[in-house]
Amino acid sequence: MEFVEPIRDRKKIEAIKKVLRGSNLRDHVLFTLGINSGLRVSDLLKLKVSDVLDEKGRVKDRITVREKKTGKTKTFPFSDTVIKALREYPLGTLPEMALFPSRKGGGPITRQQAYRIINDAAKTVGIKDKIGTHTLRKTFGYHAYIAGVDVTRIQSLLNHASPKETLRYIGITQDELDDVYLNLNL
Image (cartoon, rainbow, N blue to C red; front, side):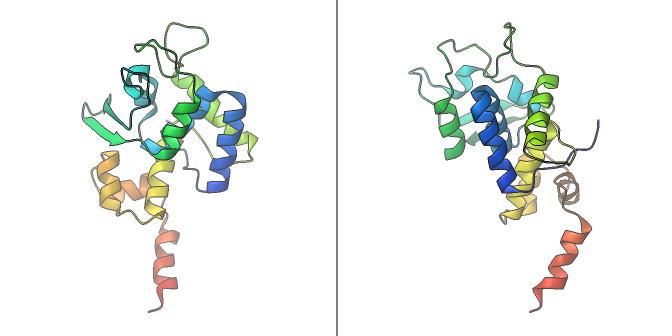
């Protein structure tokens, strides 16, 4: 698997959302849910309409997912951004339908299609870093860290074994850590 980077620039994130919203609401929701949940792409792609809508057809305020890789159950609330994106997305009425259906029918888009969607949108807005499906999860972790969330909480959210693994995963470099020493000046 090729190493990919998080999207560090919030303006680039908003530009990608704008590109995707303008071209395909499914892809916009995939990106928005991905960067706001920290879910692996395998877990995103297996979601069904019933995972995000209640029996009355309203967007739920939280989701429960059994992670494919770990087998662990994860429950978390949707952010306002995710709820807004889901409300804009015409979900249909079939609860067992894939949340991110393939245009060819029969199920969700493939991991390769998700990669193309994310990579093409990133290139469109001028991102030159290596971008892939794991970029969504890494972007979630990176921005949580930059927002001041304790690394051990991010470690727990991402199911990592150590804070060091989490920092490496979300792309926090030694230079960024050194900046703390150089700029604190108490």
